Amino acid sequence: MKRILFKTLNVLLILYLVVCGILFFFQEKLIFFPQKLNKEYQFSFDQEFEEINIKMNDNVLLNGLLFKSDSSKGLVFYLHGNAGSLGNWGSVAKTYTDLNYDVFILDYRGYGKSDGSINSQKQLFADLQLVYDAMKKKYSEDKIVVLGYSIGSGLAAYLASTNKPKLLILQAPYYNLTDLMSHTFPIIPTFILKYKFKTNEFIKVCKMPIVIFHGNQDEVIYYGSSLKLEKEFKPEDKLITLDGQGHNGMTDNPEYRKEIQAVLL
Image (tube, one colour):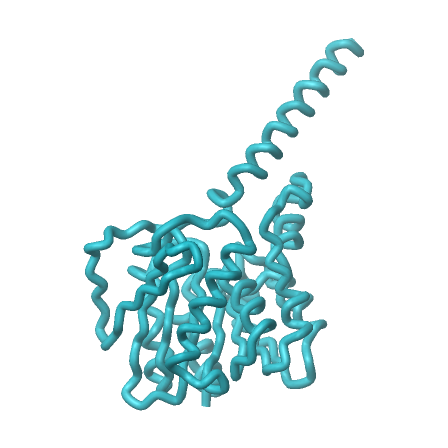
């Protein structure tokens, strides 16, 4: 009986180690879910926009869309979630152009018409900085709002922590990816995670005001993440709870639209 139990435990341990190994070497496929678009794909939206390609340090081209408002007060630099492409994310722009902000939305490596693939946190952060620098040539930084949704919230927090935008807005953010992984998959050791995205550390050094929106019914990134982030706030920072809101579709929430209008006055 003891021998059978010992063999069973050995098999379970081996399986556990194999699963951990797979998660370590293939975690990009478990974190990022890009929709790839053909280079000939024609975006179609009910407002004016410009398609922009920006060259990275390794000559990879990243694709983005710049939506123009009728009377611009500045730019919303928008970092989207971990799935899809500009083909669907572009529809969020109207919420902000209606408030007289231009909107730039980037497709990360491997998303949409962007070349390459994401292979490290360092690479991703370097890409963001190059694209942000390109937008600073078009807009004064004191008129740029950095906004990140879901996976993009940690990227936005990083970018704001190393630059000086006017405002940082986070939609459905995580405390950091290690915390989210521990909460969602407590059986998996967090040391295998190559992407940390330490939002909690980034916001500590952000000098600009921070506004967080989070639905208290979020089924993907638990609402408690934002309650933890709130403890790192400066006096002027703000958490806005959207009652009954899940993870997706926040931009269409009437309460969000009401609150974001006040934030972007």
